[in-house]
Image (cartoon, rainbow, N blue to C red; front, side):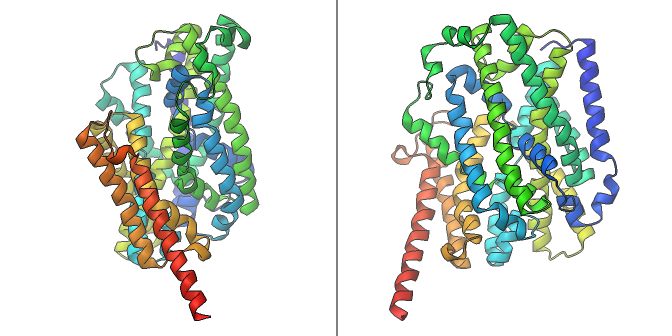
Length: 470
């Protein structure tokens, strides 16, 4: 994208406002763990919705790529499964999570199980909350307008996020999310208006698209579509869902905040999918479909409007990056190192979190350089670490289905361990882009099948023992 002087002025103003909002009054937020990591549990409904909506929608370039290549099925793949599991979270977990008055997912694991299970679960949660894919996406957006090498763009984007997150904590994330919520909707509404003006309305658009783009599968198999519903299980153990729920003023705010967030995601998915379809007809020969939105902006937007849209993309990514960075830093510094060293001082735990942010940034940069693919990073994190965390965390809120600490530890290790082993075997026998997994089965299914089987066997044995004792 080529930005004019006016567009660059908007970018500079945005970054300045971001630092101002993030750092204003931040010194007081570091006095206690609750204030630094949860903002004092004072999130009102508008703040909750703006923060969760913007945080849980960071994969904007991936959405653009999928819409460009496969059309309306983007809503089925990246929309419907996440709506479903978000509503399930709101109904069955929001009240329990908020009323627990805890600070993090690892806190619940430590409270429910023993130390080794808590440590194992905290390590899994740290990987699940990794901001690496979003640091890469942020670097790509910086590259789009500067032409810098990936490493320099990565360092620049990571440094900006680390400064205001490690200094301002949760309050910095929430304050900047309000701005980013407004920008993401404004930017994509704007490009949709200009694309419609350039090409024509929806009827003309749909007539110009390939037939497969107008189907709900996009030419993919039903089995492929079903896989995404399993990947969307991520929602139930997603650190942002738990973190914002812990931070809500009360359980009612959390529950209705999630429901309203789903409505906003539906609106935003509609806008972004249509924008991807307009990119398909207006710039049909893209060699890199992930650049669908920047290419569309270059084709239809005048100066100033282009700057606003670029900020919309940037805000969508940064709002997710800063939240995942804070949660990952907290998990590493407070919940793993702090727990192992038996630290009780709140000020010291906050310092550990700040140090955790620096380590998280370094590890994320290394991960991006090792696997420079947004989709592959998402895939590895979800496939390997969700199977070991899913049931231990969910059953922590439902004692009837819970296993003992020893068996829970086994489920964590075996669930993620088997998925990781199947993943490694697939890459060795094939490649990262074309793996040959054992029995042709996705690694996530290996881990999930093992943990579900373990829970079913142990629960069945418990019922038999209970029946025998009676």
